[in-house]
Length: 470
Image 1: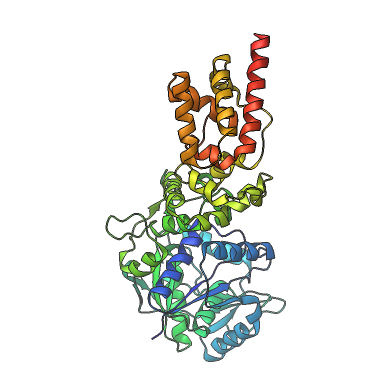
Image 2: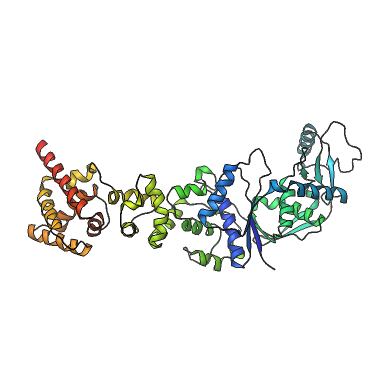
């Protein structure tokens, strides 16, 4: 049997963390078993579904690298098929028209609650033989009254539901449009989905869907219900916890692999291992190892993972993602002829690509003023002589390499009989405009001789002006 999984989001908003994790688990399970991963857009909610949301979902999937083998399929393209199945259930006697008004249903539920009964539809239209004039009915599935439904969940184990506790759910609204529990059954059946991995908020729908499949003489898929994600306060994850769009993490400078690694560890583990390559995720992922309890979202852990990925990722891969963030700062990466060198210099320093882009600006463009704190501390009159000596040494340097630059800094320190810090820190502020940078030898090398000479001139002028006004 070929494993076939699916991810079936509703396009009523962005692709959020919970949905992305569900997509990842489904994708990993299909890839691990050499199966197919299907993308289905459940867009029958016409009022809330938007093209922008569809695009956001597709964009998020692409950025994370969750490629799908089939799709995207859209439920709105299958209304004729849903009507066909609804009619089949009516003809079989497994569905019926319900003429109850909203007010009648509310009265029924209030009476049940007053009697301390579970609010549920009491099937009063199940045996109705005559329609009610002037009422557009809904269509309900005739759920079995007796027996049980056993969901042999791949994560939770066996979960047993009494049919007597399941009411006759609506499968078609009064305007004829199908409901979620009908469309998902038809789609999974028609697309031959045999493994459904989804959030455990769908668990209560599962016995109802299994009963519809049984009425259609179809084999139910195997189900795996993934526990929800909670915020650190123990409440269901929401925007206030940072549960934002997947693409916001893209915009905030996270690498997609870091987010995937974080998501796979939200509820799944393999020993004590924390960092997984994509290939390792595919190889080691198993639904049997998914926790039965809820997971807690921790943005600090995600940030730590992102920092590790920046440190270890291929420079070319980082460059591909960094270009966007440099562009947002008005920098054309092509302005520097050694972008890879800049990235290598910053890899061990940055937690996000935004950090890397901001902290690298002085490599790409000149600045007009020095950081006030750094200048006050390091661009003092006593720094003028070391800076002039370094400027002269750099001007005469024929071999422009980090090693040769390091040698010149040492020589100047020896000649002036000062410690390296008395040379390095004024030089760093002079050529970078700030007090933080990678190794000074590498920094000077990457900025280039001409720019360094010019910027040291600017620093000397700054010192002269400061001395003149003091």
